[in-house]
Length: 251
DNA sequence: GCTCATGTTCCCCT
DNA sequence: CAGGGGAACATGAG
Image 1 (tube, chains in turn green, orange, blue):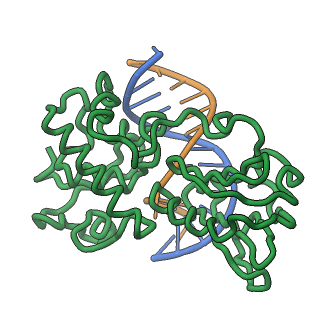
Image 2 (tube, rainbow, N blue to C red):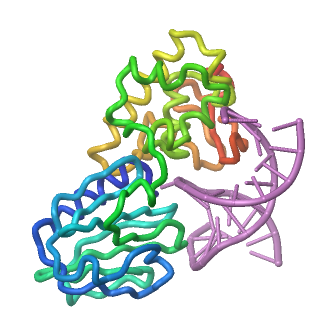
């Protein structure tokens, strides 16, 4: 699930805990607490949650709660006495409710951190919501990799994941296997425009919409067809990830 | 039993 | 150094 829009949805969920005191951190699965100790945030008050790429950053007193959701993580605010999910791994118990970090496959995790957050997140490029057309062109200049590989790179632009990148390439009508360095400025422009649109349109939904008129709404069908032209979509590994594109329109 | 999965990292090549 | 391929991580769902 978690790409930029999903994590933005989790941020909205986290806001329900903003301003509340953390009474207790329940570490149900200690392997998901990847750094720091409960004591760093217990008794502190949550501030306003932020997001950078696929990272959720939640200030708590002089520390920060950093969360990454891997492929199966999510965040829920729930009443304290409501039933927990079997994959809830770490729970921030507050008065009036609790914030539950859930993660089935256990990729990603939670850090309770006082030092530079870059030690945890590694270097991240600008968030995809903040990359304008000029910046996009600058970032992609002198890149030698494919469109797929380049847009997936979190150190270049933060927040785009597998579904989003396929969606962007499809909207821009660019073959994801193409080398960035071979793209005309017109195609680069199209790519930026598609990214901007996909990001903006998926933010309110809190996910890449598997909707009519979106590649994401068609890619998982048994015989997946291009929503624009009806051509049978192609599916193959590109840059190590399952990639779906329209062989007729994407060049 | 088998394959595949919205992410990241690490190792080995070229 | 940049980039690609593949494996590993852990746990399902189909």
